[in-house]
Image (cartoon, rainbow, N blue to C red; front, side, top):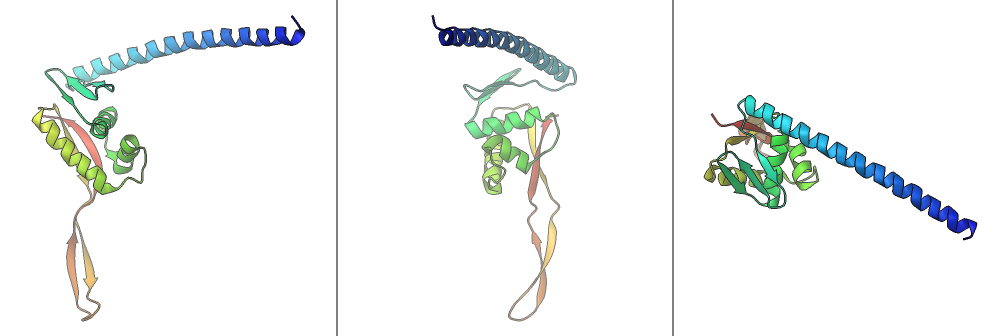
Length: 167
């Protein structure tokens, strides 16, 4: 063997050893991550929450007493809200988590939200998904021809979503 072949073999051996160590570390970290998730699920169960189990392959959400299979976007919508731990998620956060883009049209998000709520009601889902709206505001508009002004109410805009246990 020439020196270059020996050098190449030594580098391959070193990389294989490093990969073995990284794989072992990955296995340990995954086990710790799963243990922490189970601990958090037990903590939620003690606090009165109903723990949900997410199956990404079948896009199925299971809970004690039921399950529901959802489309890709509605599944991600529920998962993002559940993982937010009862905190309000702004509409941009939902857009990023579900569509991967904060510039997703609000209409798209609203349609997904209302369709999802209807679907979950049918399955007796143990949580409520609430939308958080801005207050209704009144704006003054001026007629360009007559110069008359009048006030009109603008529909409240959805600014976020929350996840709550049903009472």
